[in-house]
Image 1 (tube, rainbow, N blue to C red):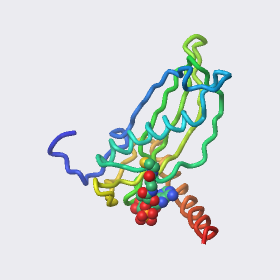
Image 2 (cartoon, rainbow, N blue to C red):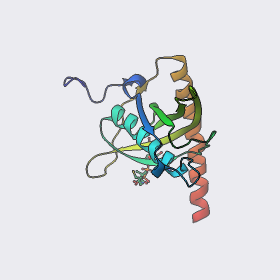
Image 3 (cartoon, rainbow, N blue to C red):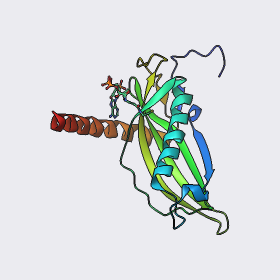
Amino acid sequence: MNENDDMDMPRPVRDSQSEMAEIVLPNDGNPLGALLGGRLMHWIDLAGAMAAHRHSRTYVVTASIDHLDFLVPVHVGDLVILRSSVNRVFHTSMEVGVKVWVENYLADECKHVSSAYLTFVAIDAQGKHLPVPAVVPETDEQRRRYDDAGRRRDIRRLELERRRSVRR
Ligand SMILES: CC(C)(COP(=O)(O)OP(=O)(O)OC[C@H]1O[C@@H](n2cnc3c(N)ncnc32)[C@H](O)[C@@H]1OP(=O)(O)O)[C@@H](O)C(=O)NCCC(=O)NCCS
């Protein structure tokens, strides 16, 4: 970051793009040697937070994680790659997409494991919510994700409202 950067200026999606890699070790797996779903969820949260921090340049908390599918099994010894970026900023919250791949370097194979959408809220050291600078999509893929993120937010808000009314 340049010290003259205006903290409120919109930032391109590429500024938040992050990548994380993990080798699946025996402690990450179940007795059959398959990666635990909870461990992958933890890595998804971390990869998502990296993109949210890079974009907002503040502390963030995870407000929600959308539905997750695990499409293919991952095994001890596999290499897991997680790529994340900010899809869209709302006001104090932002949607981050995390795409997970598994690489089996012995078989020279790479497969899509999961796609996750997380919402992070920016906060200061006292926990007060902070506005987040806008994100600027630059490619067709980024513009598609930006548009889709708006639709997902509408669905999330309706669902949140429905759950709150059930709890009352
Ligand atoms: C998430 C949290 C900050 C929301 O606070 P709140 O005062 O209830 O939220 P508000 O209604 O003022 O909404 C603040 C923003 O969060 C968004 N938000 C709140 N709950 C959300 C949810 N369940 N899913 C997605 N976004 C949510 C709102 O849409 C709003 O976004 P906007 O400012 O961009 O429009 C608060 O519930 C919290 O601190 N939760 C615990 C977070 C945590 O500990 N996470 C795990 C460890 S990191």
